[in-house]
Amino acid sequence: MMAAILSDLIAWSLLIQVASGYLFGPKQVTGPLGGSVTVSCYYDPIPANIHSRKYWCKEQRADCYTVVSTTPYVNQKYGNQSLQDFRNHFTINITNLQQKDTGIYRCGIGNKNNFHYYVVNVTISQGKKVPSSSEVLIGKLRDSLVIHCPAPQTLHNESLYWCKLSNTKFAVCDTIINSSGQVNSRFWGRVLIQKERNTTGFNVLVNDLRMTDSGFYHCGVRVLLEDSEWKDVYLFILNGKSP
Image 1: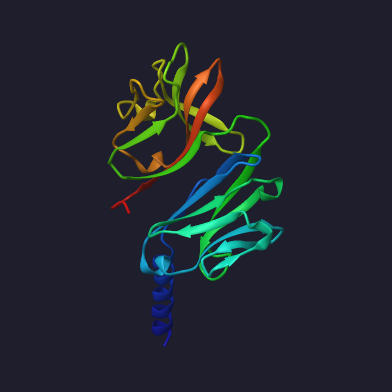
Image 2: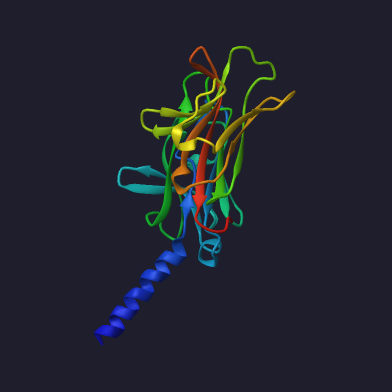
């Protein structure tokens, strides 16, 4: 009898793991007042996830109130937010950003808003400086990735950079590589900056991807120690086949 119970518990535990898989997205998105932002939440495309309810809810005290979901449901208080589901990710579009849209949200999967989810902080910039874009990239262990970053066509003494956030709360970004020749020792021989001619941007090439490469990054142009334009990037490294 006890063996049967243990067998059922193990089977249920495995079912939970299979039904969950991975779920991730940007930790923070920022947009200008009156502007718009898009949040992309990526999930393991197993049948349990593909056919389950996708939701976007806003945390208030101990609860998370549904803003929009695929049931379908739209909270009329947040009529400027919409959700679109794809095979391995879903996107939340927020237009005409207002102060009421700021806060902590969850993008998740399931009938309830407290099981399989990822937390996203939505903020509104008080100034003109916001990221030119945000992107989530999925890489495969030992494979390579190319990240396109913003930069003006004409560069003078500006420094191109690619850095990794070691402290997202205080926005501490450790330089991985820049066009002045600095390279982080953990990425030595694995990373390269390539400025393309006659284009508004540059590429960062990362080879021999490792699990520790997962995380949040910035890239862009630094002028007089101030970021004139930058891009937020989240890398997620899979130890197996990419979706």
